[in-house]
Image (tube, one colour):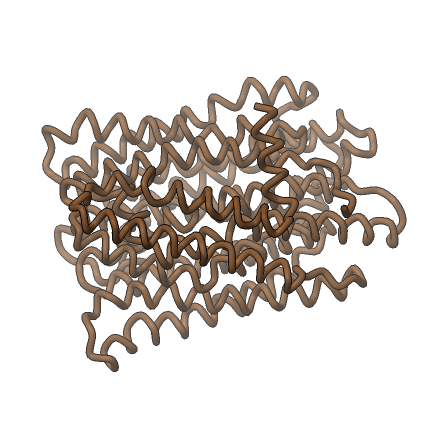
Length: 525
């Protein structure tokens, strides 16, 4: 048996993300019950996506790619107090930047709507503007929450930082419950937006006590030596550009969806919540835990290359073991997945089939997108932010060109309902994801002088296991339909659970290490 690298804490990240995502799915189900695929739902998700742009750009970009590698490296070399002062300086600068961005976002909301959702008009446009102005103050709070995450991750305190969004979801859900029975859709969207803002404040506040315990030398203001701060912000421009490119890809989809029939933006958001679940649980969890671990590696160039090869090979197998069955489930049993989570109230069977088509399109690039995130983290650990930038820009170009063709042009050429162009958007993003993944892998292999790739036999075993398990799930679905058992919630225990158990059993029969590793970890709990 091959030697495994030291545990990185990805199971703690996954546990935190799982709690957060479960609450997110509960939130989405309640939201779907009240809004379905409606104009108010479109407006809410378009506004929320605009708010997420600076949050992801500053939080994920500056902190994950620039701050964590420097902060973790300083701590690994015994400079803990100075590292804490650097963290305080970064937090102070972010707070100042946030203030400017929030004010600009509130006043520029009408112009952003025209750019992001050009297909919105009249009451729908006015509602979206109002929602953006409510959401934007929460952006700064969520960026500061990501600053907390960067510090906690570097101290290997993974669970709290990734479970903190649970309180954001709870605030969201509380607003839906309180006002859902008395408000019409537009008023409910506004009241829910205020609940989201309160949740943003609580998500930041809940992490602060642990941050100050982990970093006792942290002080607000520019009290640190300039060297580390310069190194962090030297990488900011390429990181922001790279992360911005990824965000632009998502916004391109949103813009194109706004030009499709009503409900397309909502359907895309519902599908994204589902296909981002395995990416977050099994991709982000591994990548987030590996970033500080890889950034802390010490030794000669050869020794670091050997350690990176070992960590990356194990991490890629870990990711693929979970992503492959996720992709097969979305493609073959997507109606069961969507119906179990969303169906009910304004979200009917037709909505379920529509979102299934959208989520099926995402399976094209699910594996590539997840692995690409790990390769980007590996480059960031080497303090190389420019290589991921180049490939992210290529991805944006391809997403835009292919998205326009698959989303708007192809349905017309095929003579099908233009609403199915939403599925074309996820297909185009998947193709672009494969191109980015291939370029990242090739460049990283050249950088470390090692060929890092998943063995063909390993991937074949995963796909065969998932397809056999899906055939079992499909048979159960047909059987339930024959007996008239059609309640959507039956899909989880009656179809998806046997599917997962069968997949684990078949992969274990192939002799793979991953199912045994999962069982060992479950026994520890």
